[in-house]
Length: 96
Image (cartoon, rainbow, N blue to C red; front, top):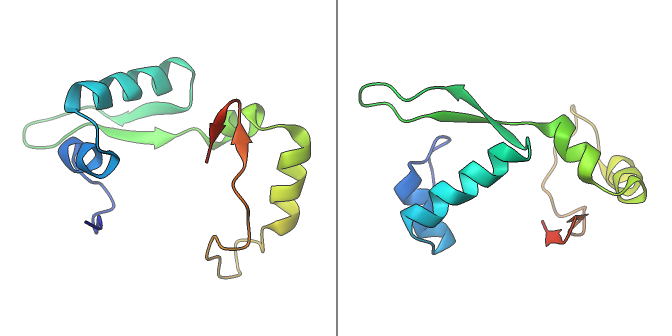
C-alpha cells in the first residue's frame, strides 16, 4: 500500500508501519517528549491533530560528521532531490 495523502490518518500510518494504534500513539508521545515533533494544530471536529517535525532538533541529534556528509550531498533547495544521493544516516541508535 502506498500513502498518497500528505496528511495520512493515524490508522494509515500504523498500517504502513505494521503497528497497532496504541503503539503509534506511544511513538508520537515519545517523539514529542524528545522534541522531534510538536503539535501544529490540535484535533477538531472531523479533523485529526496535525504534527510538525522539528528539523533543528533532528540536526542537533545527528553526529556532526554525518551532518557534514548530508549537507555536502544535499543538492540545495532549487535542485531536484530524489533521496537516492544519500546513504542512511544514524540518529542515536536509529537508522533512517
